Image 1 (cartoon, helix red, strand yellow):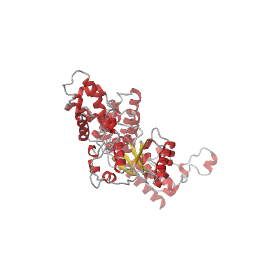
Image 2 (cartoon, rainbow, N blue to C red):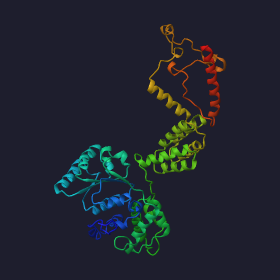
Image 3 (cartoon, rainbow, N blue to C red):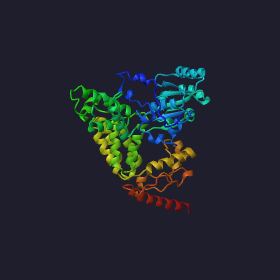
Image 4 (cartoon, helix red, strand yellow):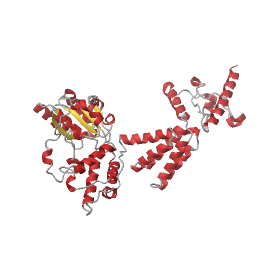
Length: 451
C-alpha cells in the first residue's frame, strides 16, 4: 500500500459515529494518516515512523511518549498498514495467561499478529519474561506503548529486540489544530452545536493541555458543556468558562517516573551553573506538581555541601535552616525558605573540592584496603598498649607553636598523599593559602628529620 494513500485507521468506527455518548477525544481520534498532527518530522520520508508504516513486516517496537501523544493511534495505524492482525492488550489488566492466550491465537490462526500492549511498563518481570521467547521466535510482533523510559521499565533482553520510537508531547500549534478540528467537525466533533471557540479560551486550553491531545479535547468538551448550558450559545467560549469547567490543572509529574528525575536534575544543574532564575523555575515546577518539600530541602542541603562547600561555609547552615523551617511551618509558607535557600545557593561561590577529596580517599581505601594506623595516632587506654608503642610520639597540637604538628598522619604507604585541593574561590581561597603554608612546613620538617 503506498505510504501516502488515505486509509481508514479504524474500520469499525463507522458504528461508533452513532454513539452520541462516546467522549469527544475518542470520537476525534485520527482514523487516517493525514489526520495525525504533531509528528510530521517522524512521518517524513526516510524518517523512522515513515519507514515502519511503509513496511509490510515491521519489527517489534516500543512507542515511548507522554500521554496524548498518539501512541495508540500509531499502533493501530501500523497494524492497518502492515495488513496484520492486531491483538490489543492492556498491561493494567493483562497477566501471563492473557499474554499466552493472545500468542496461542496467533499460532493457531497462523496470521501475522501485532501484539499491542498498552502501558507495557506496568508488566512485571515475570510477565515480560513470558513474552520474550515468543517475540524472539517471531510468533508475534510486539508493539508496546509506554509513558515511562523503557530503559528503566522494560527488561534488557526484551528491549534489545525492539526498536524504541520516542514521541514528544504535541506542540502548541498541533494542539491548536486538534481543537480547531473538533470545533469544526459537524459529524464527530462539536460543529453541530454552533460553538465558537474564543481566542483566549483556545490559548487557555492549549496551555492547560501540556501537550496532551486527549486532555485538550476532554477539557474542551467539559467547557463546551458548561458554556452551551449557560444560555450564552451565541457568545464565544471564554477562558473564564474553561477555568470554571476544568478547575485547577495539576502539572504532569510522577514521583517515581522519569519526569520527576528530569526536573530534579534540572534544578541541581541550574544551581551548579549559578543560574538562580532557572533554579527557581524548576523549584516552582516541583512544588506545583506536589513534590514533597522536605525532599527538595534535603537535595538543597546535599548541594550546599557537595557543590558550594568551603567556598561559602554559610551555605550548609542556611540550607539546614531552610530544611528545618519547612519541617516546622509546612506548606504553603515553606516554599519561601526554599526559595531563599535556592537563590543563595545558586549565587554562592562554588567548590566541590571536599566532595572530590572524599572520592579520592575512598578510591585509595578500595584499592589498598584499611592500612595500619600510625603508632603515634593510636589510642592507648591500657598499659599493654602503651608498652607496645601505641600513642608513642604523639604531640598534642595545642601545645605546639601555632597549634601545628609536622608529623605524618597518613598510613606509611600513603605518606605524602594529597586528597584535598582547595579552590581559589570564595572563602576557600584563604584555606588554600593556609594549607599551602602548612604543607610546606610539614615537608621541610620531615626533610630535616630524614637528614
